[in-house]
Length: 244
Image: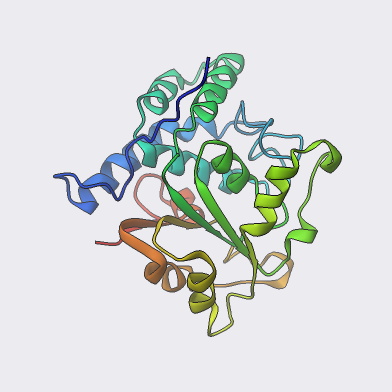
């Protein structure tokens, strides 16, 4: 039986709620999903990260911050399947049950119709990979090129998946004064979500503190800039701003 794609609730879709009111609802759901960020990474995502492990499993790039990015992106859909997943997340949660439900969420393509940009994706762009599997149109930007991306078994990956990863990646130093203009030209802008996780970490000697300045002109009206590090410091309160 052919699986129908679910468009969910796009943050930019016309509703009676203001942008800030919608953001509050998204943050509430993101907090409900925050228990996905468990030891061993987000259960059910390992088939989509291309590194052999779930989002947030271990490495510096494939970190708990990528898990937080994924939680927030799923919350943006406001999809009933995502809400059902959140309802399963209890302190005594069963990992196998959550893994099964997460795969259902991804395979239902709950992020279809949404356009994301990950600023500073690193060598293991696991958030972008899982979001694409869930239906989103995702671009990545980093000072490293796609030829440096990490894989568990590149030979076994669908060539179409690899081709999209290369096409949708922009190798760029965000400190370049023309960075925002370059990204807009190559992507068309109009993003529902621009997100970052490690721009300010100083990883590999690279630190960038103007993610919001880059992001805002690239967002559609009602789009969101989400900083996973800021959210981690103030869960449910920090890190997310909507463009009215």
